[in-house]
Length: 149
Image (cartoon, rainbow, N blue to C red; front, side, top):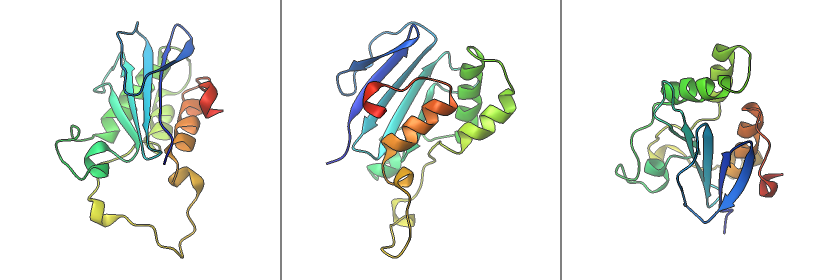
C-alpha cells in the first residue's frame, strides 16, 4: 500500500485534511492530494495563465487508464500558472522558475508505454510521488507538511 495524504497551504501554513477533501480556501492557496504514492494532484489559486490543476507522478487519466478520470494535461500551461503563483510570493526569474517546475509535472501517457524494467536503475523519486512532491514544494519555496519531511 502506498502513501496517501491531503494538505492545504493557506495563510502561510499547512493543514492536514481528510483524503480528497478540498474545502473553500483563501487565495493564494495550494492544495495537494497524494494518492497511493503514484499521483499528486496539485490545485492552486490564483491560477494565472494555468487552469489551477496540475499533477505530479502520473495523471489520473494514465493511472486509471481512463480518459474521463481527469481533463487532458497541458504541462507548459500549468508550469506557467505555477510560476505565476510562485511570483506572487517571491521575487526572481519567473521564466527560469517555470522551466524548473516543468520537470516535475506529469503528462498524460499511454499506460502501455511505461513499465519498470527489473534491470533498470530507478530512483526513489521516480517511484514514490511523495518524494517528488516534497522536492516540488521546495522548488516553490514552500515549507513541507510534517508528513513529507
